[in-house]
Length: 187
Image (cartoon, rainbow, N blue to C red):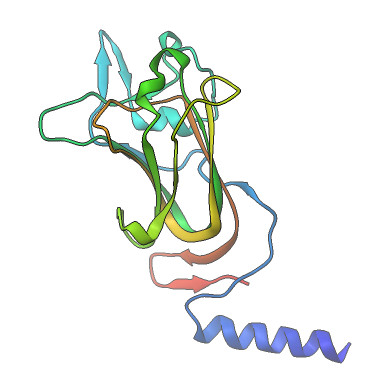
């Protein structure tokens, strides 16, 4: 009983005075329905392949079904796509669904995790997609060790377009919840 009271007291004390407080939570999908952005948006006829299509919960890998996001190559622009998770989390891994006919649009992608704003700082690199996988169109990038951040970005280093059918960011432990008035450490 005493041990639990001491833990509760310390947790309350820390929640008022620290900016980073860890809690134990299981790994879950963090990216579903969150705001996503990309450098350019491919448009074909009436169909716009916008960034939000990669976090809508539909991992259909048929590009013609209109369920994938896609950038296009423009002069002097290196394509990237990112999602704002809203709160800071411990990021464990990223699962990327793409289309097999555009595999060159994902091989070479580097995955970055950053805090507070979008950044391609080398210290925030989670990993990269370097080759094909045993499951065509499905790629996994592990952050080892897990990285802390609220932005997850996919940067295409070879200047190809990026085609993403779904990006699932997995992690746990809300590190910092953002509100309009202040940041609230989570327990």
